[in-house]
Length: 93
Image (cartoon, rainbow, N blue to C red; front, side, top):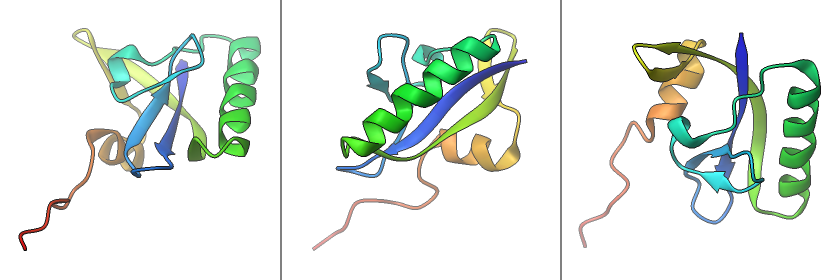
């Protein structure tokens, strides 16, 4: 099974995924799929470095499956998290 790192961007709280180049992307489709143990270890190390640098918070390695060309977290909790906020984030003054 494939894995990827999910986290929340620190400056705005949005869900982001670690990309292969070490950047953080807001699309699960553009996230880095860690296919083996060395990749998973590298992905977690990069995500912890980003957390220490105050770029993200709560990085976590999640299992991901692909169905009909669409990546989805295996866990219901992470599927909800990956889909974005479940409440409106804007405010009317």
